[in-house]
Image: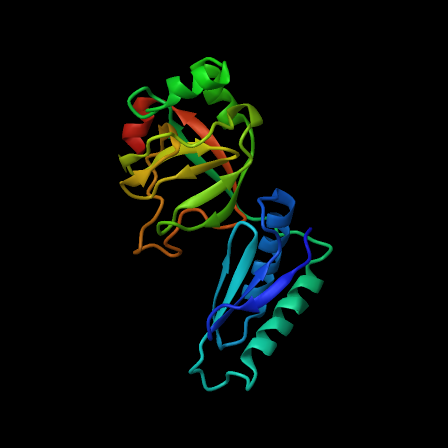
Length: 229
C-alpha cells in the first residue's frame, strides 16, 4: 500500500488517498475503513464516500457540535478507524444480479468474443464464473464500478462511445464491470442486461449495489428476464 495521504477537500471535507492506482487489496482495506467511519461517525459527519483508491469524509461546517478544529478531528477519527481495521476486512453483502446475455441485450458480446479469441458462450461463462466486488459507486447515481473481472475478458474501452446505453446494461472495460442505472452515454462493451432497478430514489438505500458488496452475475433466459422486469 502506498503511503497514506490526507488533505483538505474544500473547507467541509477531507480526502484520504490510499493508492493512485487500482489495487483490489487496497480497495478492500479502504472499504473496511469506510464502514468503520460510518459506524463511529459523530453527529457532525455528513457522509463517507469511498472511491477506487481513497475516501472522502464530509462534515457539516454549521453543526453546533462541530469541533473547533474540524479537519484535525476528522483526521484523528480516520486514523482511529484505520488502526481499528488494520487486521480485518469488511465482509460486505452478497448480491446476485440476474443477467440476460441474449443477443439483443449483449450489444458487444460478439465483438468481445472476437477480441479475446473466445466464443460468446465462453465469454458469458467466464463473466458469470468469478466473484465480483463493488469498488465504488459514482459517475451517475447508483452506478457501481465492479472489480473481479476474469483477466481474459479485460478488453479496452470502445473507440467510439455510444450516446445511449440502455438502463440495466452490464458492460466491461479493462479489469472492471459496470451496471448502467439509467439510459446514459457510455464507452464500455455491453455483454447483457439485468431486469433489476439499479437505482431507485424511493428505496432505502436507493442504490442496489454498495461499495464492498460481493456480486455474482447469474445468467437468465429472455423469458425469465421479462418475468422479473
